[in-house]
View 1 (tube, one colour):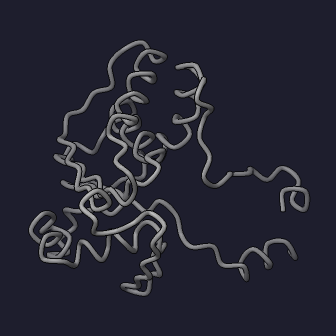
View 2: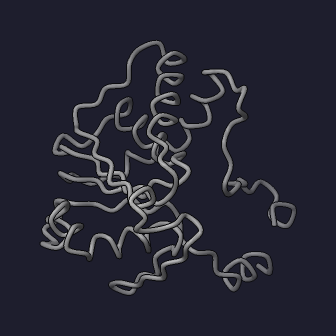
Length: 186
């Protein structure tokens, strides 16, 4: 597809830096995703799917460097794959080393580990649609099902009040070949 659209920016799926990457390499990789936090509205709670945790690290880096909304008090990471907390900490430490100072965290980070608890498997597909949105069955579908459960409702009450206090970070959408086809033919 990139060859058909000269100058297109290629975003690979399921990528990360090499195991022997330097702190500068890790920082550069996550800086791209970190910039996305500038799009966050003023919310109190941010809910994020956490699978490979690349998006998690990028968002936490952005929130701690570019800045979190002043109203943000908590980030809820919903683990949909093997627990990556130690990996996240190592990545953030490498970024801090490359950046030259610690990443601020003026908000709490809570982990709800659905995978380790046996509620979901990373390779499981959970189709979910709400408000005309088809959520990615590997990521947001699992989180939406959990948010709709009694435990999710207790943990993130703002989501169900729909009062604008809670935001779901969308990692990605399920690819639609028809959309890709249209892009190649234009």
